[in-house]
Structure formats: C-alpha cells, structure tokens
Image 1 (tube, helix red, strand yellow):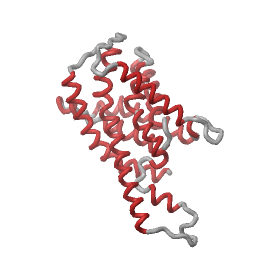
Image 2 (cartoon, helix red, strand yellow):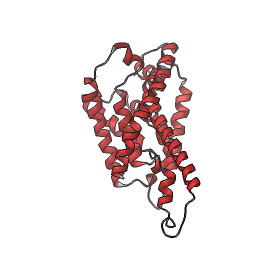
Image 3 (cartoon, rainbow, N blue to C red):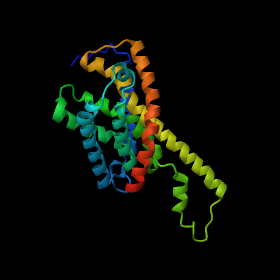
Image 4 (cartoon, rainbow, N blue to C red):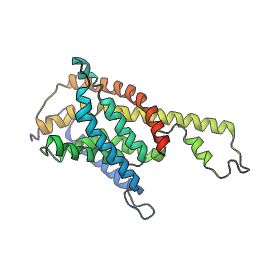
Length: 252
C-alpha cells in the first residue's frame, strides 16, 4: 500500500465520483412494494453469481491462452471482449441498477480468494465497481428491464390489453417508437463497451495504480491509451450487443 496521491486524476474527482455512484444507487435501491434493493428477485442473484463465476473462468483460465501481440495489447487489449460480454450480459439479464456492480463485487471477492489475496482491499472493490460497473448501473436507472432490447416501443404496445382486442396502434407512431428503441439499443452497447474497455487505462492508470501500488504513468501515455480504449469499446460493444440480445430474448 502506497497511498500515493501524485496521480493523473486528482483524488477529489475519484471521491466525488464514488460518492455520487453510491448515492444514486442507494436512491435506486429504495424499497419498492415493500421489497428492498430495487426489487431484486432470486433469479437475479442467480444470474449475477453465474456471470461472476464465468468471469473467473474467463479471466484466469481462458484469457491467458489468447495470443497477445506486443504493442497491440498495450493500446487495444482485445481479450477484454470476454469481460465486456459477461458484464453487459449480467446487466441485461437482471435489468436493475446495481446488477453490474454486484457482479464485480462477487468477481473481486472470488478472485481475491483464489488468486490475488486481500492485499490492497477494500480499494480493489471500490476500483472494480466504480470503474467497470458504475456507468452501466447508473444507465440502468433509466433503461431498467429494457436494457439491451431494441424494441421497447413494440414491446410496450404488444403488452397493451387494447392491442388485438379492439384497440389500435398508429403505424407511424409505432415506427417512431421502434426507431427510438433501436437508437437506445445502440447507446446501451456503446455505454457498456466503452465503460469496460476504458476502465483499466482510464481509472487504473490514471489513479488506482499510483494510489495503491505506487506505479506511475506519463500523462501522454495515459491519454493515448485511454482514447484508443474508448474507440475499442465502441467496436467491442457493437460486436457483443446482438449476442446479448438473443440470449436475453431466450431467457426472458
């Protein structure tokens, strides 16, 4: 432990971001219909635990087998596609704020037990949750169960009792809602991909590596790898989006 505050990202930004995330999550988890934690169900925790276990398998047993090509993985670490897929899948299947964060908490706990040990905790819990999951969780406050669904308008209309029972839906209105839903589906993919792809270069190199472990990076290297990771996140998010959608459609 170094507690070195000579970081690229100023520590007040990290503190504000962390407090803001947990405050908004607490608001989203306010009791609803007498049930706490945002109305989570047993099946939600099953999905979260299963994805966290798959993350362990992927990151410690599968990802190391993927060939790494020198400088390519310095600027574009393509094995992150597995983690992108799994974290977004947990958020999509559960569809409740906090699902991505809970997945990362369980994953971090399991990885500490089987591999890393608990040195540096609780800071690694904070890093994993606020870097890899926070933005997705906050987006879920707005998207909810429609996260990674490209047909929100059609879905809501099809569940309307008036449809098919003497009710009618304006075709143009339905088409406009479908366009909006597809646009939000793309936003879902972009937010998820960018968040997970940029977590390590932006948050770890920018703050946590220096604060906890004493590693330092030049601002130029941090900026270049962060920008490249954001571009990679756009690509990765769009790649995994259709697969997540089909899995969610089958399981929902």
